[in-house]
Image (cartoon, rainbow, N blue to C red; front, side):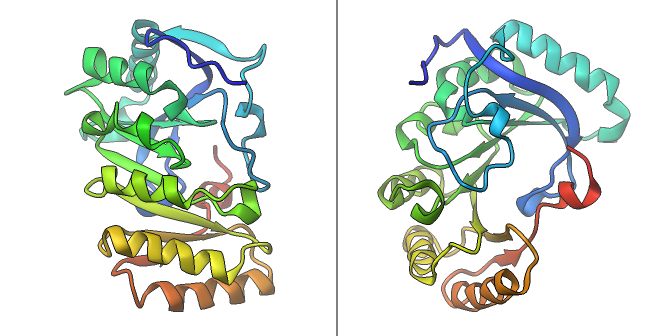
Length: 239
């Protein structure tokens, strides 16, 4: 059971500077704050270390985390070229700590850093607490074939809350079915066909490649902005 800690303390797996490797903002410099703990268990998860709050997690207050973020920014300031620095809250699942993040942004980050949330989109009640303080929401649609749960009701509610700031990512594996992908396209388009959709292949084998191209042909008929993008940070061999 994951504990929802109070709004002033949260467990952090790591904080570091790198470049965004996924989605429509791939390539931008960011400071990444990876929270410990997740409410899902996806079979393709590439950060298993952050799934649980464990002995390796460090507990930060909002003030201490702001100071740490600021230190990392100062060390990498030249890489932002005068642009407003972006902080990516990721995990794990950062919205388990929505109260903490909202306090952090309101008290310390507002007007200094832009806030970018990477989430599994399963906690619409939590995003309500933080949506107005976010600049970008990167939301995954999680398929039952990957996590064992049907989350389309939660995803629909999530998109309705965030539709002006959100883009959606779907990870395609050999187990992803056409039926569930079509359902994801319909879910997005019913809320807004202007919401960008990223189709992210989990591998580059022939089966997955053919599936991804077919899925693209399905999605582009209902959503205006559809892109096929792999995890670029893995190609770059960076975090």
